[in-house]
Figure (cartoon, rainbow over the protein chains, first blue to last red):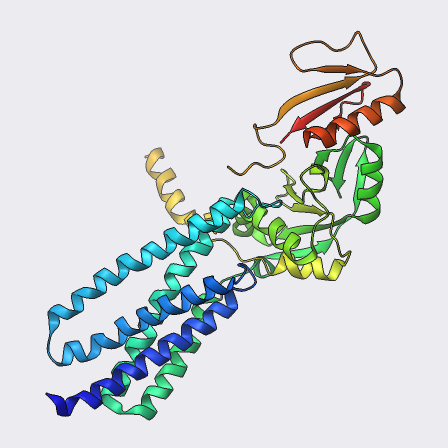
Length: 305
Length: 66
């Protein structure tokens, strides 16, 4: 049916365009947590292009009607899982030479995000194509803009600043033990190192709001993500042969507060607080034990009976 | 593997002591005659072994690889 071709072409093109733009915008948000190597950018935008093509083509396929064609979406899901594996493997191999580790939880979170973003792209292009098919190009524009906003909202997850207060803290030594306020961090043996840490180090205290937040910062992976973010933004004086300067986040076992110590290149407390506050909350660390209250109560009552 | 400073992966690589009667055992032990020398030896070893110096505050330093 050649007379339908231009129509379908417009529909598909509208979807692809909307999807690829979404991918590009979402990729720029990534920058903070993942260095955008030029080749990485290219790979992700191209995969985003394929994802949006798949989403866009689905509409004419259904209308045609060629329902079996929709099964290729399953194939697409397979492909995107592949992206997750690829990202994970890349970051894991980089991790070996990283002085301040991201932590496996952070890597898993980033990899999962990359996968999920392709689904968002596919959704955007599908919605745009549907609008283009049934309501014309102006409607497609509106739907594309709306889906982009939804994607942005969907992908900007919670950050530490949402669930915790971050306040400046004092570094001190109790004998050889380095302390952030009253939290013991590590034993530093060499005296010149102690002096340097006191002079050039920075420390903050992360004070969780309530039990759920406490459970989140209790997670070791979340804490190494915080330390990593701080080290990325302020720089760190650590080197292979100076393990003393590793940024460390330790918790107060009684209150659940977390003290972070770092020896930054740039000694700027405001910046450090901002870096800690902007650390994303990892999916694997997010926990809401308080929400389990009713279930626990039920279980306890059952036991009594 | 990710290792934080307090993980079980820590291993004593060397001991630097000024108390000859206080230390013995499996790790290499370096004796120093005074605190100044002890500090110097420990700092050299730390750089050589990429290890961290911990002070046990009884005249003995240990070097631990984390």
